[in-house]
Length: 334
Image (tube, rainbow, N blue to C red; front, side):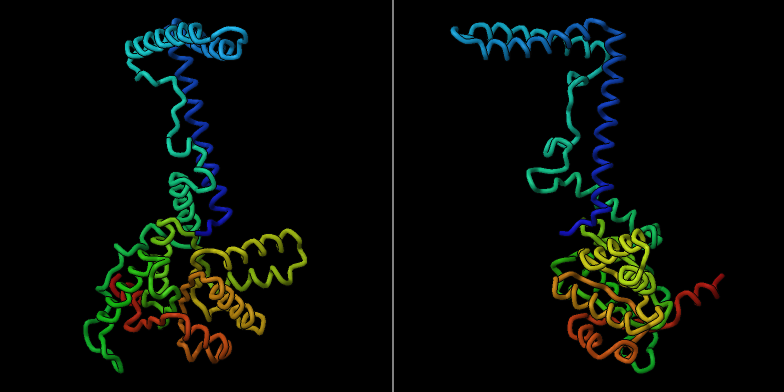
């Protein structure tokens, strides 16, 4: 699972920020309790002193430290019992002043050895969804909110399935793809059809579900993506070129890339080459890609080249959308 460096950094900052807030809250509570009950402050200082006594006794040479250690331990237990009693009288739990981590598994570090802890993975998933929300309206775009009412149950010219039957199949296919991401039979999808039939909506649904399951997802339009590739190659501005290079690394290295509206960009020989490089690189690295386009596969072949079309036809599951434009239907109802 490849985590976007930007997403991982933000998630780690949130984890550290939450830890700092808990520490500050605990110190504020400590000051309040000590002001209300000075004896608690005295006990805290004595407990710290007993720790030093234990260390000193353990390091003392020439005599058996066991008797002294037992006396110190007994004193420590008496202090802890008195502390718990005072805290209870103040309406606080016995461990109110202890540094208890929110995640006992990793101690709030985010890592268990070299493996990322579940608490940090959850934050990464949340940050991934936030990142996607910059380009997608993820407030409404989810599989639960997808409606089939806009697709006709009547026969469609030249098709064996009605638009509604076809969309039911596509919906189930995309839902399974997202929920079983990484284990689904078809890792790459090509969504094709006229505008306004739900390709971008279902792409966003896939993006959201896969991101919420902890995978790194990058969504972008073809126009933006190829512009970044051009900046990375031709920009004379060092900072701009560096930013574009970081973006192109994300396109190539994420678990799932969703390339929306292929064919809307101004197609040049550079774009043709960049598209093939993008598709081929992700295929060779076994990284999943979802492409949506108004172009048919014949249109892809005519606009780009046979080599690119061949890779898409051979390695992508093609899902063809048809029916009446949903956006126009909604507009007529207003």
